[in-house]
Image 1 (cartoon, rainbow, N blue to C red):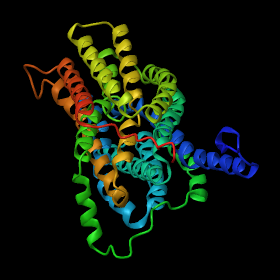
Image 2 (image 1 turned 135 degrees about the horizontal axis):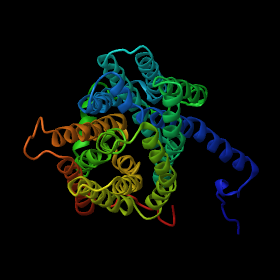
Image 3 (image 1 turned 120 degrees about the vertical axis):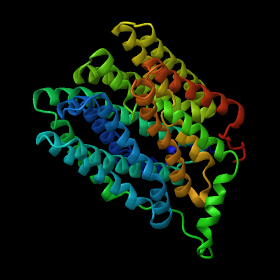
Length: 430
């Protein structure tokens, strides 16, 4: 009796083993390498943004605005991007996004080198947010097209995990480049690295969009939009919104960096070192979360990850309320990054499970719109709730962090109670 062997585990005929190796190389060049470059670029520049804002003569309000405007770009991009993904295909958007990100970074480098205006800075940040979302949305759609359900968790979290490889060195390099060369240097490096990493994708990435139904006509888009109202899709959208209010404060929203810079006086190099440390911790956690999702189910990581994120934000609220020293802040910094790394890519994996096949582009477009609205609200709410200009009697960092804690804890309860497990294992016959 013969048994089938998995070529990816070293069994099977030589031809199958060679095909598996080619598939892994293709996956690295078209998925992981661009993700590493994006993570490296974000790490290079994120820690420099508060200092660059200060160099332009602006304060904490403008610093928050720099992160908010980037999130605004990520909010306006998903819906048209999702529509275009279904209309013209995945590949054009997948390639265009990183190019836009690189151009945006080059323009910011020009502003930093020539003491430009804060308005120019904000415009270019907005453009960068659009490009980042174009790449992210099209990349997740390609995974939904090509990956079996039992491998999606690992593929998506591996994309976020290797992105942390870039983030590992990025913050320290960005801080060093800013100190030794100038605030413009990290942005120039960002653009060059992203463009170089996309060369293999231009050569290797093929279109993965499923063929159109010949009888679809103009009625197909309308029916596709209606498919987004089927349970549990609306509940998934709500959870993504709430979760990203919390996560946006850690990653794209920059709330943690602003708090560390303005409340504790940490420099770009010090913040960069902390971010790099968190990348070391986050990489194995993210990969492990993907394995757990594909082995035991999506909710096994989403529910506890969201709950821990809420508790970590509550602890950061305590650091300001109790006037704790910088050592306690660093503990909270480590805690919130560890908690958020557990759910990096998990909501996207859940989305690939429930996305209707005939409207994946629209689904991910609307999904990312909802999620990025949450990320946009994160720094906005933090700025409002912590600023006495808006709430003179109750505003503080404690109130702001408490709000971010509440959103994560609420999302954890919703997933645990209202969403059934979406990992369906094949039967022995299959």
